[in-house]
Figure 1: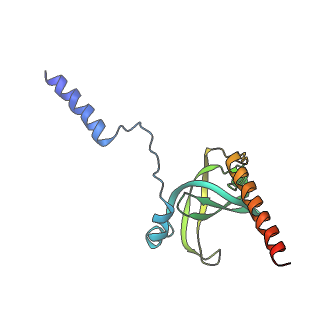
Figure 2 (figure 1 turned 90 degrees about the horizontal axis):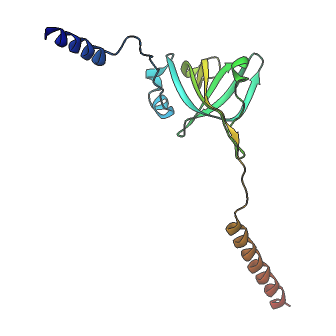
Figure 3 (figure 1 turned 180 degrees about the vertical axis):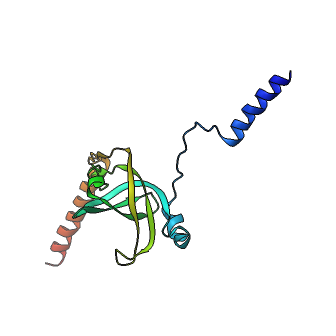
Length: 163
């Protein structure tokens, strides 16, 4: 009977403390938290997740990319070799790659003119981006034609009225 209690106690300890063999994942932080708590996070290693947007701007051996977590976009400075892993950036016609970056957060980066940025040390692609096919919706097309016709009719009536 005492053996069952010992085994139960060991299992309970593993559950409460955490099994030592289990993987540990870093917890990401939102852009809003980073912006509001910029002093607290300055010069610390953080993990930030979001969609690559705009253009990947290669600057010699490094590159800039903006990463949007749905609240704000933050600039990320990373090696050009890491930047090559980014295939899609978000725009009207594409959904950007979903990225998780880990690096040093800078509240006012001296290297980049006092800008708030992340100097990326590690990049992981969570999911790839894709092209978005946008087609004209028939209801919107029909409404546009009706409104254009009404505008044309008003224009014609206005011309005859002034003559």
